[in-house]
Amino acid sequence: MAIIPERYAPPPTARETEIRLVGAARAYGRDQEVFGQGERCDFVFKVASGAVRTFRILADGRRQISEFHLAGDIFGLELDEHRHTAAEAIGEAVLIVARRVSVIAEDAGNQTALWRRAAADLAACREHALTLGRRSAAERLAGFLLEFAERTGADAILDLPMSRQDIADYLGLTIETVSRTFTALQAEGLIDARGCRRVRLIDRRSLQDLCE
Amino acid sequence: MAIIPERYAPPPTARETEIRLVGAARAYGRDQEVFGQGERCDFVFKVASGAVRTFRILADGRRQISEFHLAGDIFGLELDEHRHTAAEAIGEAVLIVARRVSVIAEDAGNQTALWRRAAADLAACREHALTLGRRSAAERLAGFLLEFAERTGADAILDLPMSRQDIADYLGLTIETVSRTFTALQAEGLIDARGCRRVRLIDRRSLQDLCE
DNA sequence: CGTCGAATTGAAGTAATTCAAACTGTGTGG
DNA sequence: CCACACAGTTTGAATTACTTCAATTCGACG
Image (cartoon, rainbow over all chains, first blue to last red; front, top):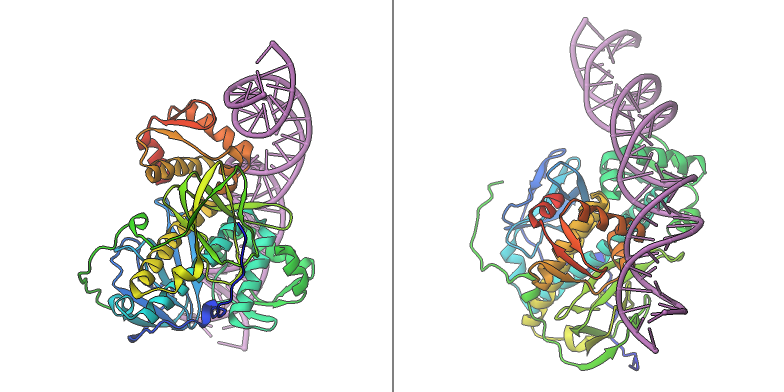
């Protein structure tokens, strides 16, 4: 098949695409549940401030964090009637809460935005799957730090809102392995971990190389 | 916040949702590339017969298969201008090839279908991430066999189109571990592997229990 | 029946886990 | 203001699930 290039406007990047979402603000405390697995999904959320984790858990408690949601991110919109994932505030957080029906029952423009959002999340999830399936602990952590830096637009100093346990459950590792890997990256001079929530990226290029 | 249940029509399940897709049929041979990572994504595909793998690869060749696409499945629709994933026919396959623009530049109805498809894929990808991050080899393989059985509507006998290497790269394992795990599941009487492409599910309940 | 790629099996090695102890830093009460 | 408590983190030692490397064995096809 001849692949014939054709022109179309480059789509806006993931996080620029705006879904119209109107609702009330609500404050959540540390580790407070936003919604649980199996609940009806009648609401959609947008992070006004703070951070949220969405995750799936197995019966024996093993947890896989799907995503961390930071200020500006929309989350909690699922296809199914009931939730496949759960969500909790990581620290103090303020969320905009909107009715699901007000978001999905809209015009074609919003439908397109909806699709863009899902497609961007899907691409990110596939990248995450590659990390979980095929990368080493050091590669996972390096990738996580760079991803976080990019998302927050941080220069070199990162203030991580999440605990080591959260990072471990995001990266498919144990808390001990995450901790040891932080230590190792520091020993190699790639990062400077000043306190467990603050990290300075020293050698970004080497971190990048780690993730290929 | 009071969670007020509200009624809305249950959405059709993932694979029922039809995206209008018109295009020409094209035959692919074993392991033939459908598209590569980085290529422009001007086309969308639907499997008429056979099976396709989509995957991401790292610079050193490590591969993570994102999905297996079977008859009726649509794939290859990405948000970005360039492909983040690659696709290859697993065996002989016939695909319907449609222009991307003919799919995304449509009415609200199709936009909704587009979103449903992406949302369903996203839910599946998150489940996959849970598997890759948190499940053991036996749990992964049991889950894979059950997922395949459900998707193909097979009663007990499965005819797997993909090799052990494909399964390994889908499950984030090595080919040897997959092979050993097949042997182990057989030894425990959960499956009967008659030839490496044909599997009979004997104790579905126990397989289900393995995945929780 | 022989060939060749794919799959299985075996033995040794290793990255990450598990279990356990020590440390750190932050908030609290004396 | 210091000592204490405690939750989170780091470090250490032992274990293990999975990988790696190396032979076989299987099975499809000429």
